[in-house]
Length: 362
Image 1 (tube, rainbow, N blue to C red):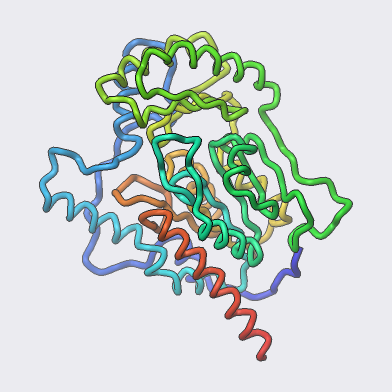
Image 2: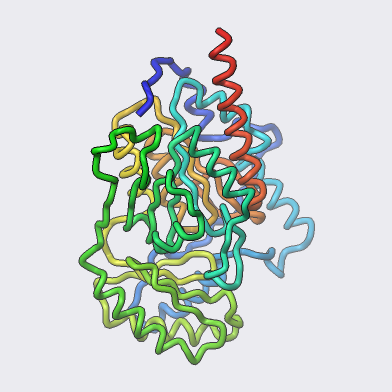
């Protein structure tokens, strides 16, 4: 662990990190969608709620009823409240002065593009090089709904922390890094839902069998959760798919269902999510009760909202949502796609190197 810096940061800098600066012109609010974060399993009336949530989970195009001027107005209003992290980079860095930056990154849709086949969600070589350079400058963690082993095979960087299955499977760097120099120390390993593994495997097998009649449906075993992907399912088949999932889950009261981008997530009912994983990793890095830490979380999914909200509740750092379309979010800033994420991460690396050069000249 590097030596902590004793620099006092002005209160206005802290506020600036959590909420974008006020911009003249006002803000036209976008109506909130009353979509349940965790959908009930029992009751036929819930199927319609499931379908509404499935449609709202990934707005890949504007509402058909919206006029071009309304679409433009909504997007402009949203950007005023969630400005580009690239455009606001200098302000973000000002807010982080005297603090230790810790990076948390989602994988799908953040480091890699969203693709039809989840087994082919490869990150580019240039993104991998950028994340490697980032990890040399700041403690860096991947926080994903994917199985930890699977996302590690995509990223292939041993110096990172990995939190798979929405944070229910956490492991620290597999080799000595500048943030963990004690070679005798046990690596970070935390699996709060280990007792659910047999149940998850059982439900996975049943869902594979139950959904095989739905063209395009794909069931993925992410070790501590099961994902039912419907990205390649025709919308007219969604109701049938929801019925199939419900018919399996109603027999398992210890599991709950939540929503991601074109995916239904089946998870244990324990109180654990990406926000809890963020706190655990900060504690593992020695920042549990530190006021001079500046966590930055970048993600594109509804499940990342738990982490964005956790940062707001802590009053530390900031969240960045990756999205081309307006979404209701607890993030303070936005980026449009993984290429912009890579640009932002590279600017962080360049900023860190320049800061070190400037310090050496003093």
